[in-house]
Image (cartoon, rainbow over all chains, first blue to last red):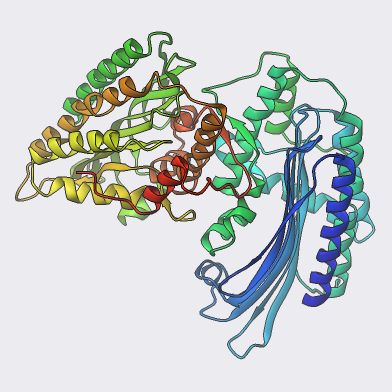
Length: 300
Length: 300
């Protein structure tokens, strides 16, 4: 399974990066291959200063070795080894009318001291972070998410949509990072689903990514915007940074397990502002976004 | 003691903000008085878009109430109440030749369930974060720190200077946030020092702040700078954000104890950049700074 999933994310990285380059039309991804001292490594691909994408990364990695301290605590395991691989992507567009998007699909195995696999699971999801709210974009993104979920189980969309709203909650701001999407973790084999069913679901979600996001890019990329709308985007990007550095388990896991810093922090936006106590004007488009972020809604 | 120290930081806030306004010559501090639901409150003063200071805050607060969860864990205390007050300041200049400065001086009391005070201590310090390295500025700042320490004990400077280097270490980057200064905590009454001795020391450190920083501002404020030097400042500010949101105990304490978010996060710089895998050119001024940050040195 681990070879099968790694092969899958290698191919997915290729298809996503080539399509993003085609849509951008200007910038190309820069590739860095890196090794992890304790075992494994990755292939980081970053795009910067494009015609559409100001900064973005589409990274894969496969790491293995002794269970790090942070995982031993989390799983109450004294010792053992692990394997983890996944694809992570974040795209920060220039135009504030295009939302930022994040996705991650991953697979994990844990072994006891004899090397016997004791557990395996999939995790991941994808979520949308707009700066200006176009209801039809939110509906489109969530519809693609729902359709892929519905092919596997009638419960998946409602469960994983709620997980996503819960996970990307910026507690200290009492607002969501964005409009959500899907978030799932510890998808193990059960009575109802084999591990291959899980694989099929997670790879189907990954395969739907471009369809969930690119039509929104195409629709919004030529809308003119003002300096104050760009400022708003950069201020909202500050909330993105706050979430990723204070709350995001994936980022903090990477920072605590000697991950490759530049691959982990490629998620941070290119230019960010923090203004003191900034609030949008009453009844503005900016305030309409905040209203939805503080009270996540059902889009489909 | 708590009234005496609070009175002191009220006056210190007034003298620091009025002097900063005078030096800036353009912007004025905006004041917000806030209340904490669980007890206490603060007086936040923020300056933005000045002639010299791009953004800064000089805040005081005095909070009290039931010991928050995070403190009960830290002190192994089942229940009780606390009082904490302090002054925190951060100044982010426009000109990358002027360093960012941070300072904090605070006082803490803990009480048992009968309301009897069980412990009291002072904490704080000040540290300098330059974007370009002027050795004489580092020497000046540390000399002021050392002189005030030496009036109280011959050990203070070496101890608190090392504490500062250790505390402001950005572990995931393996570099210091800046050039350090002083950092001290849990300064309680001992055989050698009464709590009044501690008060006298901490207030003397606070009183030396303007002398440690303003001569540097005056000396660097008219040096011309290029766009790429400004970019470098904004990239380095990214490391400042990473430290404050990932590692800084004060910031995380505030976020976990329902502190006033805008007063806590006033420390974040106004404009910040994250470029993928950015490294300064060989033998550049930027690289000279990094060399000192990765290997903190003795300045006096």
